[in-house]
Amino acid sequence: MSILKSTLIAACVFLTPIAEAFDRFTAHGGPIKGIAHHAPSNLAVTTSFDYTAVVWFANSMEEIRPLVAHTAAVNAAAFSPDGRWLATGGDDTSIFLWDVETIQNLDVEPQPIELTGHTGKVVDLAFSNDGRQLVSSSWDHRLGLWDIETRSPIRFLQGHQGPVNAAVFSDDDDFVYSAGSDGHIRQWRVDTGEYLRSVVKNGFGVNVLALSTDLNVLAYGGANGVMKSVSLDASGPDIELWVGGPPVLAVDIDPATESMAFATAEGRIVIADALVGEIERDFQAVQGPVWAMQYTSQGSHLMFAGLDDWVTRIPLADFVVPSALAERERRFHPDEPLGNGARQFARKCSVCHTLTPSSKRRAGPTLYGVFGRKVGAVEDYPYSPELLDMDLVWTEETIDRLFREGPDIVTPGSKMPIQRIKRDSDRQDLIAYLKQATAPQ
Image 1 (spheres, rainbow, N blue to C red):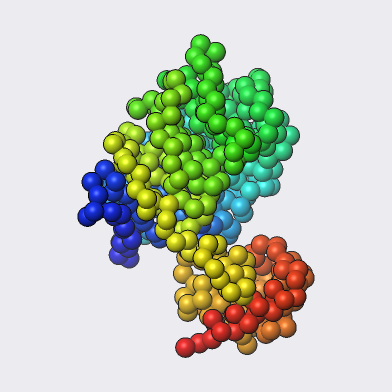
Image 2: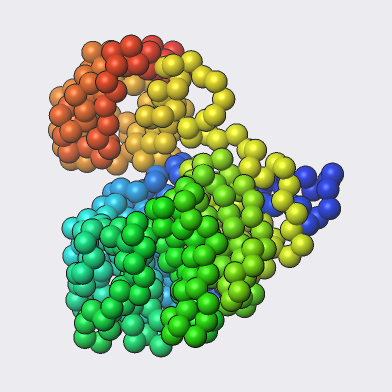
């Protein structure tokens, strides 16, 4: 298996100073949900709605390989501090442990170890600093503590009144801090699982958090647009950068540069001094949500990604935001005027399905030649057993029924998200568009 080259776009490199250059890379077939970086081994990983994680050489952003094990969107990834393990978690409630050395050997197909126990989607993962434990955050309202040596759960921690969105270990591994949709950041004792206190009471859900014990800073972002940090021992200032804007979906702290970064559901990124709160950069990064963001290379670069299937990397030293940064046309949910049928496809289908013959890197099978095709007949797509045994042919009538009644009724057991199109005219316009766009050439 050869190393696949990434797509690189160096924006404005000939017309503007090098400080305005930025890089973009793509290897996914769906929106990107998570980014993890491990500087000592020069590796990065991105996770996607397309059910895969892609491993990269971090410096060059050359793709090493995709990792295929999850049966739903992959939301999060984390490297162990020693670089031996990569953990991924997703909507399928599973966590997979991947041996990093095996991942880099392209002559071997990696066989991950599955950690099971959650009953809701897994949305965040973090290793302890000694690499012996993993903490998982799930929408089943629980945190999972896992023993890496035995690959088994130590205990599940339940105290949030709703989904748990993020969690992190303290630098000494004595405590875990967790953020939930109940608006609390809670502190837990690792060795006993004892719940200690609510560190933050936000009033609205807390989506993300990042911790630096060295800087004595806990930064978090909320559903009410709050960008804030608190001093863990109350010896430093509590900093509020913003409140009342779009939800904050990503946050990171870089101790080396003493800075923290927040990203929002509308594509805005704010970078500030983590100790005093002075805003250093505030810019529109993309059109649409930023779901994943991380500092790399001792804070020299920032990587971020979201609604589309590409990753952007910008240098932070003397970086002047070019006008082209947020102007790239989006492949998913495009902004340009579309006919109603094309617009319905973009909103309901384009994230999961392609119109080309291949289903590669997509969460669903290709729609190329779909009319007259039996369910489960695309050769390069791993269908669920229920669809393989189903006697259904895609026609105007069955596609109309799929979106009128929903996949839970028409194709029970499929991986398709539950969605319906209420208006008859919208369904008919979508079908007319599909008949034209999926016809074999």
